[in-house]
Length: 356
Ligand SMILES: Cc1ncc(C[n+]2csc(CCOP(=O)(O)OP(=O)(O)O)c2C)c(N)n1
Ligand SMILES: [Mg+2]
Image (cartoon, rainbow, N blue to C red):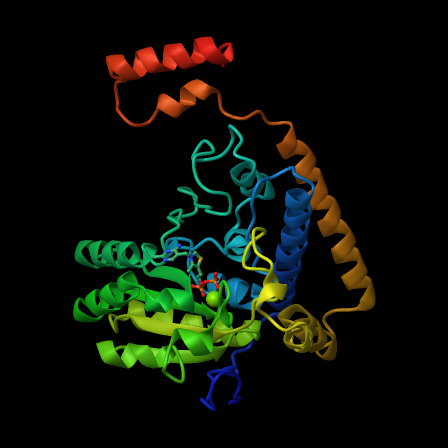
């Protein structure tokens, strides 16, 4: 099936006629719903002053869940900061997500990263830096290393429409194309880079078309259709595994929420536009799809919403009991053996703050 949406009448890759088992269909939906539940609770925490900052992926759940589920556990993910759907689909526990945004001592990076910059060594996910698209050359480098070692590993880098204007986007695509690395560049075109609409970001009709400058395949997919995203990402990964090199995927979606909890989109975006896009909400749309296939009912919906909210709230209660790392941890993990001056600074700080 071909559909047209977005900036221009460009055909979209949609469903492939691939048969997906009912359990898997429900899993897609439940992960999208859990992501939405977690995101809304995290925004509440920020509004109540219980965390400092948060980035939701509201409206982009289909793009994140569909693409992540197409990966194998042995592949590597290089996410950006709008990534709760990626983390949850990959199997990161809610407690881990919360430890990161609360900067608690359970956080993998001991509270040193900006909130919403998740990663996990156990799940092959490298935490991002805030400068846009710096993770793309890393994804290409890891893919090249895997190729040279003969490992059956693909890498997937996530970024937004605004990121396609960065130097690193172009360097990474060029390098990946020249060395034919097994990399999928997954761009969520959510319409905005903070306040800049995509029509002012680029003079091209699509973002996928930028792939042609590097002689790689560019695919535009309906990013609000979880099954279409799953199929398009699966195809790109299969090609990469066969030695066919990288693909740029542009998932056309919409950022329903604010850029981050520090942003007020009513300053630059018409509420009517958001209302219109809410009618294309990927969760509502997939729910309708599942109901038509007779694999989701009203009872399923209310039960799932109730248990997910309970699950998230219980994780928040646990997470808020975990202390922050002690101040001495500021001086750890730079040198294998602490230098004399760092030791003395750590002692001085401990004295001033009354110890850890
Ligand atoms: C190199 C660089 N330039 C500017 C910024 C400031 N900045 C942070 S997020 C953002 C917008 C990114 O938009 P997009 O790539 O579309 O991703 P989205 O937030 O929509 O998911 C900008 C410009 C930055 N972090 N890094
Ligand atoms: Mg964007």
